Image 1 (cartoon, rainbow, N blue to C red):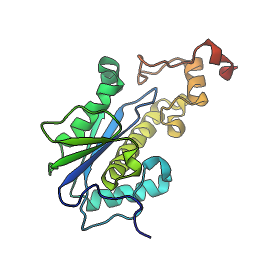
Image 2: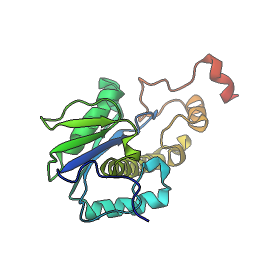
Image 3: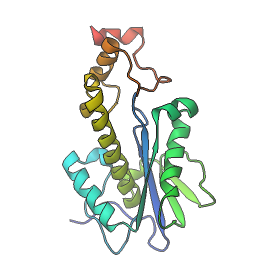
Length: 203
C-alpha cells in the first residue's frame, strides 16, 4: 500500500519542518527539517502521533538513510523561559534548517505561524504533518530525537517518569512535581501545577 500523504510539489526542492515538545512542562523543544528524495519513497509516513513507537523508529532510520538532507534543531528549557515557547519553536526550526546540507527552494511549515527564514518562501499548513510527506518526516525525526533526550533525562530524574510521559502535563507528571518540586529541567515560566479547581487530581 502506498503513502496516503502527498508531496506538496515535485517540481521544486521542498523542505518540511515540524517540532515536538511545545506543550511539555520540561525538557527542550526539538524541531526537524527534512528534504525528501522523490526517487526514494518512504512508505508509511504520517503524523508521528499517529504512529507507534516501533514504527516511528523504523521510519526514522529510513528517513536518515534516504532523505536528500535533514537537520535537527534543539532549544533548551532555559532558552524557552527566556524567549517564550512560540519563539523557541521558530528558533528550533531555524536551527534545523541552518544545518541542512541542501537548502530547499520552499519550506512547508506545520502550524499556522512562522518567522521567515533567510528569504526562503514558506507556507504554513495546519495539521500539515498529516497531509504532506516532508512535514510528516520532520515530525518523526523531531519526536524520536526528543523522546531520546527525555529518556536520558529520566535516568537522572526518575521520579518524574519522563520515560513514559516525555515531559507532557500528565497527572502522573504533575503529581511528581507536587511531591518533589520542579527539577532543573522544568520550564519555570509554564504552569507546572494546575489551578485550585484542578487540585483534586492530586488527592
